[in-house]
Image (cartoon, rainbow, N blue to C red; front, side, top):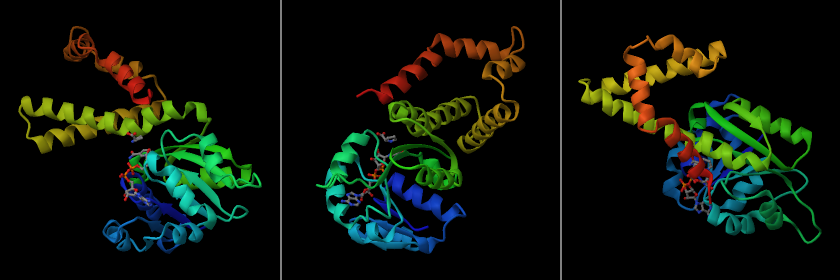
Length: 263
Ligand SMILES: NC(=O)C1=CN([C@@H]2O[C@H](COP(=O)(O)OP(=O)(O)OC[C@H]3O[C@@H](n4cnc5c(N)ncnc54)[C@H](O)[C@@H]3O)[C@@H](O)[C@H]2O)C=CC1
Ligand SMILES: O=C(O)[C@@H]1CCC=N1
């Protein structure tokens, strides 16, 4: 299978890195395009094919990912549409907020024909094969959906879902990386105030977060079950947790998630 990625920024670049590492593809099976040679330099060293011509990139892939900013979607789709083989290729939009009906309108030919079409929302942890990726079949058969699921199984976890859940999925998992990073930063700053060097504090926080995730994955528990194991009555943890809640911890996380998907 050959893959093309149009747009090599934060998301497209992370996808290329993840695909190179995923074990399903050779680097030579991947083509990436961007408007400027300078953007493509770092991808050359990964052994992938690079081009500044989106049409060349489009023709090279069995699966073509469009990973530009949403406001460039119509322009880029208009540019590549004639290069798409509607019978052979799978087209994937990785653009938050660009709807399936909008994509169908842009790809629709005068004869009403559509390519096999998906919306996919990964997160930047795809670069290290730890993405949470959502796959929405917009115009796709089971065979194409299975191809996409297998590809994104190789770069982390995937979930085939409905378009109506994409806003929630994006704020939880794609924006969620930033929210989790902010927790790491906040805890690290707390650790520094309490006496650790910043580097040490960050290592401690990262290992602690990893431990929490590992525990939940191993036990399948509700987080509160694990919290109960940590909170000695009248002890340190419950004092810390209650203080965080007095300052609005849970509420601010939920409000942030909801604000992330509004618009
Ligand atoms: N960054 C993230 O965590 C996530 C991003 N997305 C989606 O990914 C898309 C891209 O976002 P980012 O990578 O964050 O933006 P970015 O600005 O980092 O990357 C966009 C890239 O597109 C390139 N580009 C601009 N015009 C182009 C053209 N005409 N042809 C080809 N390439 C062109 C730019 O050179 C740039 O490298 C957006 O639609 C966003 O909604 C989706 C999920 C997560
Ligand atoms: O912030 C954004 O709009 C994009 C979509 C999800 C992550 N980055």
